[in-house]
Image 1 (cartoon, one colour):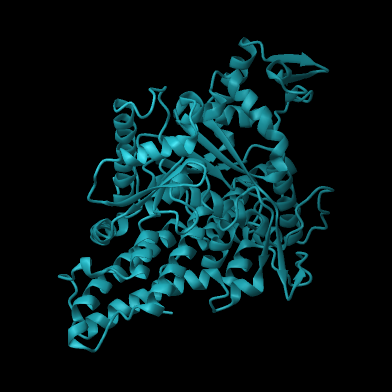
Image 2 (cartoon, rainbow, N blue to C red):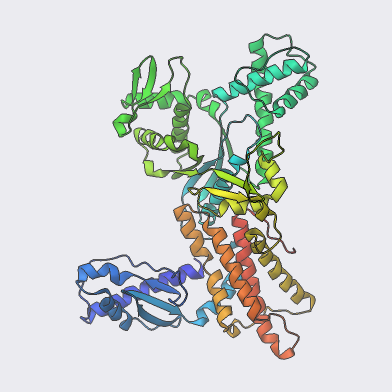
Length: 560
């Protein structure tokens, strides 16, 4: 348990003891139990922690919240770590910690190192997060990048909170899109062989298809040319799939994203899971036959309409295989929580997917679906329309080549998935403090430089006395960096990875204020003790920022 978590628990116990003391003394009446929430105030000057307990007790105690707060404050037990406890506003209790507690945290953070920020709030939970999962029919478009980064960042957070996380990509290799793609690949293959074969009416126009077809033709010497069309298409399926998955993996690696599992949709049919799921729904009375098709009776579970799972042609719908896939997640791999990160265009799929989970006997609250909104891009103050012909960025790789992986990740993580966002390419390219990516990474590089300079000048700060850290901006910086475990726990609980870049920016700002006011390395011999203490603080601040950058999947540069 981190220092911040320990102090939160300690303060919660102290408030409970104060309440009990006031009740035992007859100052406050007995009342039903109420949760004691200890939070960090958003505004400076309101203490380091606060509780709104008096506001929640007012109704049951039939007293004014300020009177309850006063009674609790007056009965507050003495503590070495608490400097003062005050009544504030309409009935809040503000708690200010002693400097000694903050000074101690510098050593706690240094000892934790790269593990600083980790919590056990999700310990023992087996969580699967599925993200991106676009059809394996070509390279990733920039529109897929936001969901990729959000899913990756969220997985990092959940692991930091102690969860056993599985990162998964659902490969849609059994649907109509792969059929269309392979038919396009066949036409391109025949064209590479010199045959005048038109593209299918519905086809994939990308040059990457023609390039792959030409490559396959050259490798096999045209061995498929004389085969019957269906046989040739079947032969092209696997190499087409393999090549596109390789492209997708390469694109994701550009964003520092990897997966634990690449799950094949086709495997649902090969293993019998699809048929077993449909039978389970039918046995439960959730499959009805109508108009020659088979329908999932969503209306029985409160939906506005039923949904087709088996078409009149006998083919399955995407929704049907998705039901089977989620049944496999919950019933075979027994995940405690499943998180799907989908594009906003899937919003109509959310309610019926939860209804399907209910029909399968799965608690729908175990299925969390995050919809990430569309991203627009601007350059030179104008919105961009993506176009290959006009040389405007189209693929993830082109975006990363332009602004860098770190800028892409930070920018996409900086806003909640539900918010529409505009990606400013000019800002992402800037090498100045105007660019928040540069600002945070520069803070890490600057801290690294200070420590490097100290070592080069022969300063050993291992025996530094942290009790010398009494300047208000030193304490303010410590206060900021000790908040990371709480941010990690809260972000993981709310599934809000955007809290990490916001926190990292606040740490960088606190660092700037500290650095402007407090000289770290002094040439004066008499200043050596405070220099050593401040070097310990610099070291702990670097640990906190490096941890944030790691959680965001970004680099922590030593020099810039």
